[in-house]
Length: 82
Image (cartoon, rainbow, N blue to C red; front, side, top):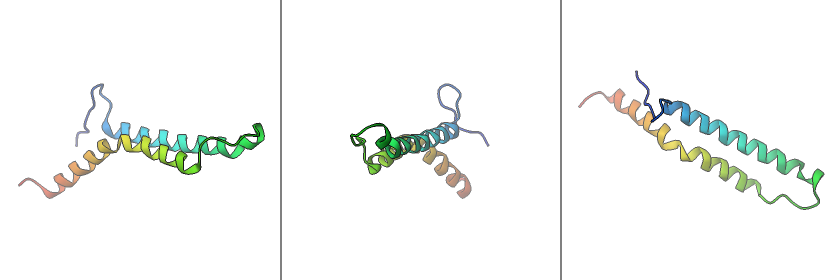
């Protein structure tokens, strides 16, 4: 089965996977910065945990239509031709 290709020959599945990895790293890195911020500054860190998590979800959601189209295509293939 062929994978969908974007403009530069990168598969849609790889783009979706990469965006999810970036979102995970984003959440982990900002969470660690927030956790250890008290050791380097007397001020509080400017982001709440919910904001950090929602920004990571937004990063992954930007590429979810690409991933969703792959899923819907597989469902359509399972049903067979009409």
